[in-house]
Image (cartoon, rainbow over the protein chains, first blue to last red):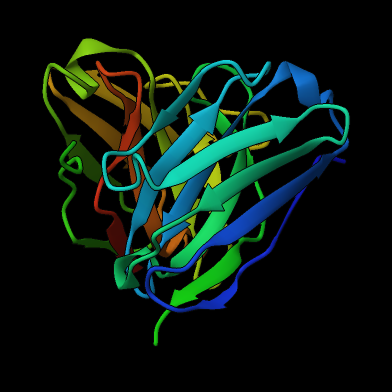
Length: 118
Length: 110
């Protein structure tokens, strides 16, 4: 069974940092791109970032570019999202999502809540 | 990258058909076949229901179908059922190799 389990969310002050993790199981992790998608309270889905299967190609939404860094450890079947210079508008549930092939986002984690507030 | 445009809400009675549009530009929806649709029930993670414009993953009802014309993709749900009441989102690949979601559409089954 494919599983994606996010962790690392919590309350952080504006300007602070947080590192999210996504532990994957039930599939060949090193063969899949992974995305992060977020959803603010009562708001819609927003694409944040994605990393290719080797960790060599990374893309970011303009709203997080230069502040967030995506990475992966294929030996540990884990993807990370390092979030720096956090702002109130980054408050959201962050989902880790498997890409089956070319933007087919077929498995989603349950999400981890990040709250940026003083 | 601006969000794709979806109607905020649509509604229909059980058994009817509804269509949700997702409008972008030639730099996203109009330029690529990588448009997919997701269903999200309250408090739940989204679920993939259509990929590459008009393909259904195994296990998704054939009442769900997708299409595209120009810069607009569409999701049609036929034979509406109470369980279809949810939020629906489209996403497209973009010319700068990123993704962009629509704002989401709340479907109400009357």
